[in-house]
Length: 340
Image (cartoon, rainbow, N blue to C red; front, side):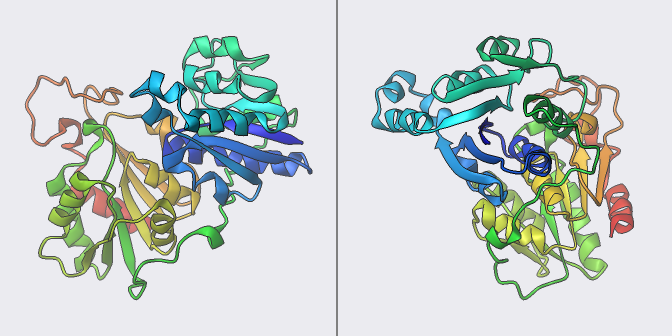
């Protein structure tokens, strides 16, 4: 059986899809997947042993100049690659208009969430088979349910198994330090950032307990923050710029991670690394890390979780964002020790 998955982004959403592939592989012996994914995340699907071909797409870049993109050779090549195979099923695991649009350029039975279940209900118009999934569940569960219905096998009740092939990960950079904890401080929304001063205090507590620290980064802003966190702490290493396989190699060797709500936190969970994740405006029940050795700390604040990228709180502010005021370094260090 040949199945095409449409799940273009983001990193966390892509990782959330991997357990569904594992379920399908156990239930359907001859199954094989191709996967349409954003270029920036094209490494990740290939880490699952059931993914035969990764088809990169550049929707994030193309939408900046859509007319120019539609006339480009790159777009024509992408369409030709999609149409070069005949699939038994095409599963839109994203439930968005953009992912539903891409399905029309592939050959196969189009499957996805129904009107009440899709994140963007209009996407359901593109599907030939539609399936109901309760929206108020974790994303991992939703995708596992979708795949089990579309591919007609019993839903697995086991712990999510991401089946990442660690041999495809890059070896840890300068891996002479073994006893280290990774601080995953970078995220997309301004409201999801744990205060920088809190990271600095936590780093000192970790080092005082005899651990080393590694701090990855993905852009210039994150690099600057990483340097501030590590300032005057010789045991804290700001890593060089790494691709996803490189970061995954670092995570795989860590004693533990502390993370904000970020895709790399989900990658740590998929690698079975003990991870303490911090949530302010977002809800860990819906999007928290899933797997063994995972601990979530959610902000206790009147308007949390607000699910907003911009903070609209009008009261006094001890820190920025204000919802993290009670989720302080002392509490995080206490819970991290229990996880270790």
